[in-house]
Amino acid sequence: MTGTHKCTLAGCLAILLFSTTVGFVRNVAEQLGPIGGAAMIYTVSSFFLLIFIGAPRFRTFSLKYLLIGGTLFVSYEICLSLALGMANNRVQAVEMGVINYLWPSLTVLLAVFISKKPVNKALYPAIALSFFGVAWTVGGDEGISISQLAGNIATNPASYSMAMTGAFIWAFYCNITKRLANGKNAITWFFIATAAALWIKYFISNEPAMVFTSGAAIDLLLTGMAMGSGYALWNIGIIGGNMMLLATLSNFAPLFSTFLSAVILDIALTTKFWQGVVMVTAASLLCWWFSREKPSSAINNARYVEAE
Image (tube, rainbow, N blue to C red; front, side, top):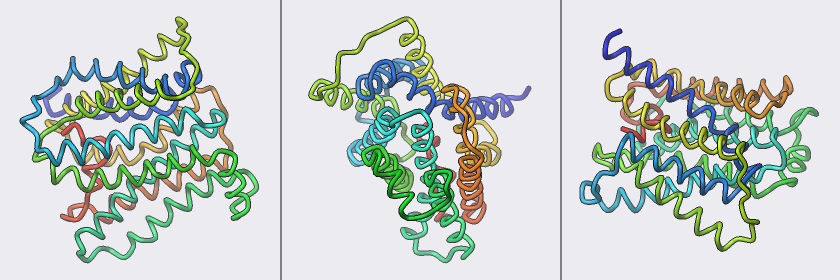
């Protein structure tokens, strides 16, 4: 196996590890609490990143990158982890994961607005498809209606709001950070900052004290390892792997994530739910296809390319 193939394999493994995030985070949140569990996850992940990637000196980064990129990253991770942890049940937690995957379409949409360059008009129906897919998933078994959507969202407005806000934040992050980073990578520091912010939130909240069991400890270790190792492997993949293949596979993340979440959480999802997930996945692929090889495209620099 050549070096390129090994790096590509590392990138593929990273995509699979990232796809376990929803299920693993929810598992830990159920045992340690949504805030405390998230704080523990990012603490463990930070240790893995320190071991595998290290923590470059602050002076190697621009102040704008650290402040703007760091704030967006921390905000996104907090929104996503708390949306998953505070979901009413496991199926709703997977819904939050699907909503999160609006970010590829939003990333491309924001890139179009920022660049102000002509784009393929077919891009806009693809973006609309991603929102329709989320609505189809969240709408429930009765079909899409405003009242049904509003009713489902009303059962847990905090989680739905955080999941949607997180998708927008990550789209901004993908478009802005690439310009500020100058090829540098502060992912370890961003994870440490996320852990610190979550610990502060935990100590000022009314969340009960965490009770550790052997099962909770194992799930926590698996989650921290998946997140930390995922970023480390992706770093290897994008440096020496086949980025065209990895970019294509990354657009299947909604499908991978939903499947693995269902397995990890031991839940059965309805046909209608899967139809929505397929729509979101197809929309992600179409957005990437219609924006590929264009300077305005940010989709290939999105969720996982932070490790660059």
